[in-house]
Image (cartoon, rainbow, N blue to C red; front, side):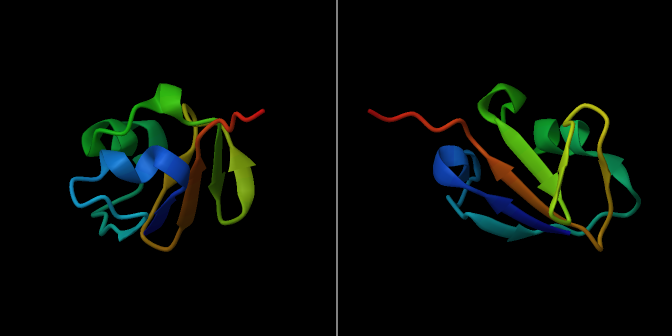
Length: 76
């Protein structure tokens, strides 16, 4: 699975990477995977799987998926 951590979300990766490749033994819930990776769900405003916006709590992902996570954006 290809995972893109946009914005400040890369800071939650131990190596501060914005793009990761994760090998999954079987499909898993996206929210479960994020908890295992230490990425707070509250920090994610938009999640996409293969270019489609998904709900974090119900989405499932597998090795063939491309997942992108985006934090809320503020500015002034």
